[in-house]
Image 1 (cartoon, protein in one colour):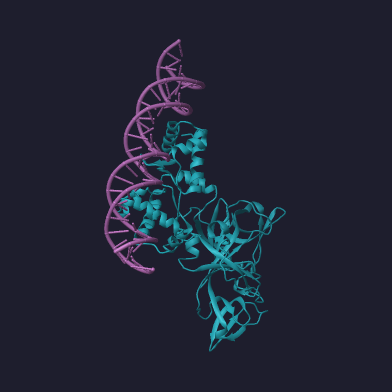
Image 2: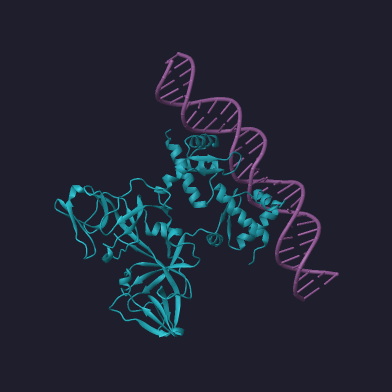
Length: 212
Length: 212
DNA sequence: TTGTACTCAGAACTAACGTTCTAGTCAAAT
DNA sequence: ATTTGACTAGAACGTTAGTTCTGAGTACAA
């Protein structure tokens, strides 16, 4: 089935209206927006959109409209995206793995939840400097941290040095009553300070780098 | 301001109702759900929720309700999460940057859109092998690719080698009628093949690594 | 007690809104 | 020329739904 220009306009308006208001428009609001004076004409075209599978209506319910998936796909192209399919593995060493042809939609990476998890207190920091370069963390990378006051040895943490009034990104090691903050770059020396002069600001749980 | 049990129930119902219908409930529907016979009482409590900053109302508009951020935050705790606040920069070299105390909510990382962008065809691959280690891409990392058939010199790409029937992750360089696929690890040799034996599967636009 | 603030109930009022009916236009098919 | 199908217009109707008014119960402080 083909959409008339009016029907296309109506659909667009509904999308835009919902985007703006968080609830669907009334028939009269649609009519006004698309320059249709008659509510029956709008009603007629709405039914056409239902036939086309792009819309659902609940009768006798004000603003009883909802966009269907077909219509949302178009919307997705217009901006939003929820998940990324994980298509498989890729060889970065000796090339071995075969590129899978079929998209396994079961394996979908939901950036928001899969990467960050359900952690309560998560925040991000942009890295400056290269002291963690051997940990494959570069300047400009975004590190995702879970806010927590403690850490285990070997964790990569954001640590606040109370006496220096600085925060730095390092590997954390508790050694007796002192803390060693170990960079991952031989050009930098570890920072060793009394344990009571270090405040853990959070532990790195993910690293994100944009390239290209 | 504290919410009464009724107000909490109303808020929950509105959330649930919108989740289910994609449009907000009417006052009478709320009343029925929360066992309030009088529309004025519902109206009264809705106004309280507006005062509390959890709701917005549009007067004289049917179903003119919208949840505000405050209310959505509670929702986030219930499972879904959209954005991660970017709190600032962190020093990984010489520690310089001060950790900001105030959360600048303006700077929010929406993983879905900010990292991936508005690209049309995006997918992810998990990396196996260490040939890109000098590019700070480790085995186990997740690379986000934009599906595209072409690439520029220097792009990190997933390349399909037609004769070997392999896909590999390398830097791309077109040299005359041949393509050089350059690893970022001195232990590996570049792959040089005729251009017609290489199919670009996509270009890496982001790298994600989970740690901890 | 008295007064005030807060909450609730019921009913009535009015505007909002979906539905339906009649009728008209226009192009393509018969 | 007539018919048919797709679309449009306007108006009227009846339900839906937000608003408002009256009245009352409760808790708390002066």
